[in-house]
Image (cartoon, rainbow, N blue to C red; front, side, top):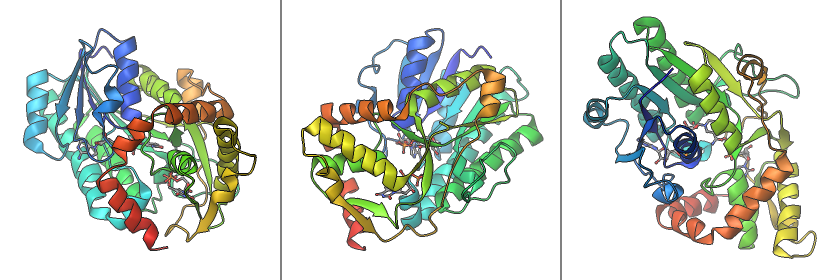
Length: 351
Ligand code: NAD
Ligand code: TYD
């Protein structure tokens, strides 16, 4: 599709800022309207290198605010949406489920409804919804999530994302809204808020704080370099078939404890510490409530149909990620001040 004005929601967040950067650099033919509420996870510093690009407009708004979304569609004549704005952290969803339902369910509904009203029967438009593999539930030791795996969300976060996926499909079937959905595995890379496993561990290692590994650390996640995800989104946006879902993953499964040990080894080396120094900080803590055992994506459809595959080898990606965090202490300092600290202290004082 050849959109002229592209609305990207959540573009000041982790994945969104990578997507905005990629589109601004590779697609000067688009005007990018980047809409974000700048919650604790959204940060304009993530966009400092591209903020002033001539094809980029930032709009500070909440996706649940119908009037604001209405204004954006009419003022900017939006032709396509890539929807990433969300509350994204499982632990927070356990503490405060309603804010996830508000943003992820109601916010998506507001966007869909506005798009439907503005676009009417237009078929040269697209609503691209970015979702997670967590909607499929939890795997045992074997098997992979495919696009046909039945939905079985088990945390308030994944239930809210599953609900938003269903709304997108419902708008496609009921109103013929052109849509595409992708469900991706765990991302890592620069600009990720240090509450998620990898940046949290990096930050704690730097400050010699305990490394909280939930349960016995045997849960498995499939990790993907965020820039590979952004590239997948670019490919799905341009070539994905109307109404289809594409799973995106790294074919890169790691038990949490093994990942943390690898990270500790890399950090010891980068910080010039003795081998085993960082690993001595590992602390097994009470398990997450309802902790999904294993996620693993079968990303063969997107490879077969759209030619996408992950490019970056995991250890190399981790090294680049560590380098970025070590080179950007001010970013970490800014983003982890204020409300984040209160949340963090509340979360871990209970263990
Ligand atoms: P993030 O938490 O880093 O960023 C979310 C962004 O959305 C922030 O900039 C925040 O300010 C914005 N936002 C939150 N509530 C908003 C609201 N009500 N209105 C407008 N903006 C709001 O999240 P992320 O990790 O970059 O994830 C982006 C998307 O990708 C999410 O939809 C998430 O479900 C999905 N996803 C994430 C991962 C992952 O590993 N991080 C994996 C698969 C899918
Ligand atoms: P996380 O990065 O929160 O992503 P998700 O829950 O969406 O997969 O967590 C990744 C894995 O790491 C998950 O199994 C929970 C675990 N984990 C810890 O062991 N300790 C931590 O401090 C965090 C944040 C996560």
